[in-house]
Length: 499
Image (cartoon, rainbow, N blue to C red; front, side):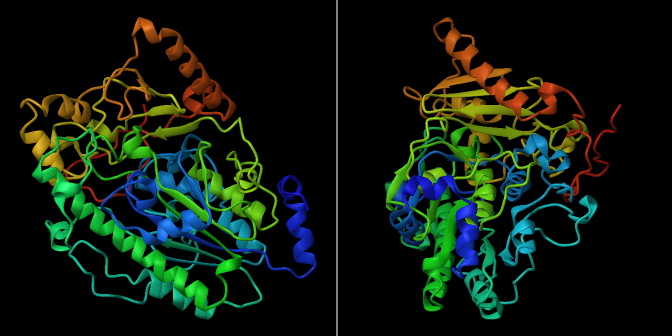
């Protein structure tokens, strides 16, 4: 069968194969917690060692323009599971919230068709699933009994790969499986100095232009690399288990992260350091011409309809994301020229538990961001007493890098970067990626870019209308008022009631 027909006839093609006795593919979904695109060997980083990710990229597809749907754990994972952007998911658009049961997940659809489910580590999280009418994690039953001795403090003692092996031992060879391997790494905290202890040279670190370049920042990045490598080691061991069981060649292996690095102007922001993620997919039976780089723009929510189509199942109507099967078939895709990213409430670090609602469109040449409430502190209030976490600028995790930037924010070489990380932002932001790849210079309002700004704004809002974002088309806009189920450190802190 011609490759283009292979894609066009799915899922019918796979239903025929199943009827003829050929196996539907297994799925191993590996997701780290807080890893930016740049920090993988195959993506060009000279220090961090990621042989498992590199292998999947070399033997499958390496996506150069993959973006999370939201740069915050729970909402990103909700989008992945449901195949929808967060503005369609009500409470699931916030972290420390819930995922209402009315939103179908790809795992539920696979399970109904006979797939065996399981997860280890961090699956859908953090929040309370019971509040949304769910009695179990949508990723499936937990496999977390195996433990290991962490190489450094801050690394979880869960033996992710060992738990996957336990899952494999309990599965039936007659049914396909879908397993979620989610590590807590490289989420903070880290053992300070673990990077140097592991033999890494701080002089070789490529410091992103959004941070000051000094010894403190370089070593903070090295400690972050240690935890990325732990994730990659777990993925490598899981791949080995698949090979030993003879199931690797019939398994779709995905390696990615839920969003970017836990540093200032990264995690919990719509800039590339927060939203652009590593993504590699291997599937010998379904990918034509493996070893390719895919430059098309994709969102992580696209994996949901992809998995369903690969399994020969229809995509539920509510899923608005788009299957990647055309990219697997090496078809040109001129329509995949933009990714869309969003934020609502992260950790409730403003008075009344308010969020920082914003939407973005990212293309090859530009990043345009629309901030709906520019009078609010984007990284959380400097007043720690109004933050659920009781820390200033609480949307940004505590770290040596954050502390240095806060304590030296009036110093030459730091002031501008600190203002970008902690300061207020205008309603519109526009960055020319050809001249400003790190998004340091906002061009919104510039006469020279007026036409570009209007065009990008129009494209973003057209997409939001098409996908029925209530901030644009009307309806309930309740993200500021949904319950917050995270740990509250501030006495008396509470979410405002809806007026």
